[in-house]
Image 1: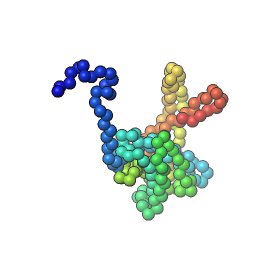
Image 2 (image 1 turned 45 degrees about the horizontal axis):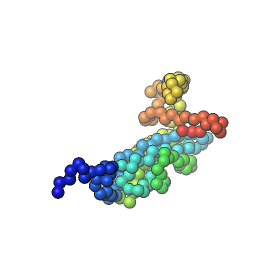
Image 3 (image 1 turned 135 degrees about the horizontal axis):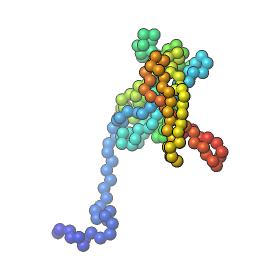
Image 4 (image 1 turned 30 degrees about the vertical axis):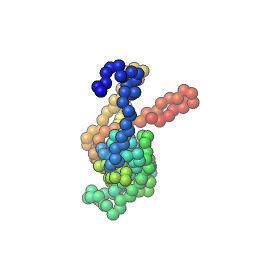
Length: 190
């Protein structure tokens, strides 16, 4: 028989039986959004890698690890694969970041950093970043200014470095900020 409007009473969910479908796991897709914070500390450098976890629709599995590879470069700029070092971070699902071992980064050498999301079926394309030689590391922008716009907005501006002072590929700036927590009377990094 053909159903009539009178056959469908109550909630839409009561109109048809429920069906659950689970797709098969696959290699993660997309690229990991990542950036570096490089600081000089005496005769060595401290490198912190930050990344955003893949969104659920790119993970394609319940478990995804993040692998960070450090590849030193020769004086001529060629990657030296035999000196690769790898770090694995298990199933991070919140904004992440980790400091890589300081003794790994010699001041007079540049490095390529690669990060990928991995599961048992494969990995994403690499996100590639460069740690320049210490003497080629750009300094922070100068003349930083902030302007209050409204309760939710602050406009930042600064004087960019002149091209003659940028000896490496500079793709942009990362702004870190602190939120004032009135309950504890302290700042919290965001």
